[in-house]
Image 1 (spheres, rainbow, N blue to C red):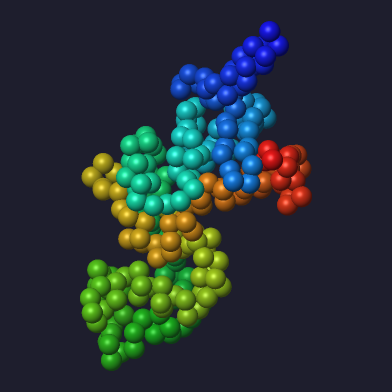
Image 2: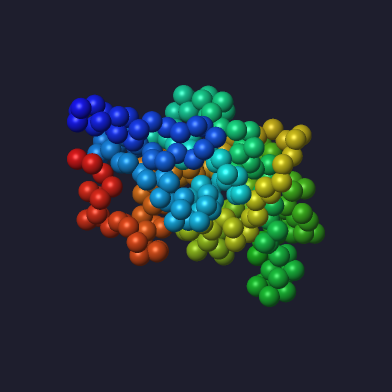
Length: 235
């Protein structure tokens, strides 16, 4: 009888609830030891704010599982599979239609940062009258770099500190347009980003470590340092 009750308890522990309901617990397979995430406890602790952990969700009560976007390895199988696994409404979380440079002020650069147009524009032998960069730098050719590379190459002369920040420095100039655009096809990450996908979207291990440990450290509750592994991982 004891054995039967034990099996029923274990089965209930790992049996998922309805797909419409948030899971009670989530079992995460890991070579460092399986992790049982008490999802219900975290939902309660976060006062039903799914976006506190699921940063793609906004106010969506049914956000995608973390492992749908953050996988062990970004390979061809993920490229094909994620298009079916993830609801279309989340596409813009990664594939934004465009990124403006609304945070860039031409007037400030002209009046406060330099009194020489040639600090950014070409000298008169190439550009007799300063004009919009996009007039020449568009898609790129053998002799003329595309607009992104040309602008980045020129801006880094003064803003090397922002480029050293990597992706964190992008928001100093760029603002992502999150508004849906039915006419726009989702672009490949590499159409704008020159770094590997793993640097744009962390793998599952890095995502969980960064999100979970970061939150625990910030709130002063739960394990977060390198000496606390066994509090999450079962050996």
